[in-house]
Length: 365
Image 1 (cartoon, rainbow, N blue to C red):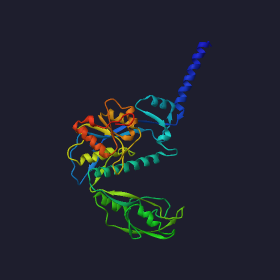
Image 2: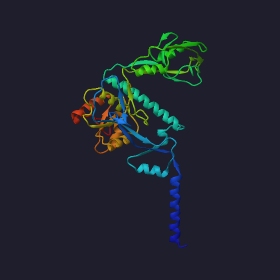
Image 3: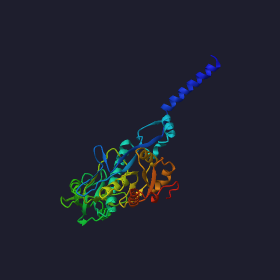
Image 4: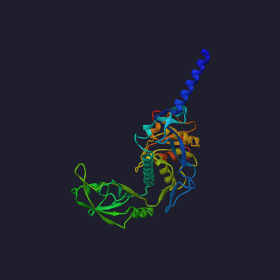
């Protein structure tokens, strides 16, 4: 065989081998890309995203869009070609798999964690929005979780309202552990509770559950450190003065909190906060209205701009990263609290754009 032909054949076979290796060889990476954006002031799948009843609401215009990131699942195996393509695609990001999913985490566990974070973000969004409007929000102590195979398993349930322990009224979640550990292991402790179903029905009416109390006696068990325990984690639940429901399926994680909160404020406030402009954003939020950073900020700004957003409310701690690759035509607005965001929206509505706090590569306005 002529040397030239042999060289070409060898090169061709090597190329085939490399192509096969690229397809078959798995790499420990995952991909992030821009996900859907949803207007919290509008409808999704045929129904309003924010549903507020038994309270006067006001018409809104414009957009307050929450943004998402689409990621490959924890069980998805990326090959070398997919990783290379993702690295070359400016609208995607390829990151180590363990960055998104801790080692050993299953798809079911990841979904559960995302669902819990999303639920908590909705709760905090409601609380922070009403506090911004000076609307009182009540609290009560509840069973947050029950440890399997511990004394309380099957006796108490997540969501049960804890009114008293051994007849002593519970005023805050920390009281429960203090009262239980007054006992010696093996002694009985009596919980006065309102079952979760009864409490949930009352809360839907914006009422604090006051009837249906039950007394449940549980024998304590010795913990590793010698304390008496029953195997529950007490938590705080909020009582809202009127029903607020957030209807949005197939979304997880905590990063929509800020935009949900702003949507609630807008619907409960005369006039409209955006002035008809297209505002998108992201950020976690806590009960006090503090805005926290999120992951995938660059993917979210791309997704927002692709949908037509003019302004993007950006958590202060995400500013430096977001500013490095801001899509053309999108203005980043730095926020640290829900109050900051409300003031920024007022400036946008009035057209006072020169006064907007902005992001810079150094994270300064």
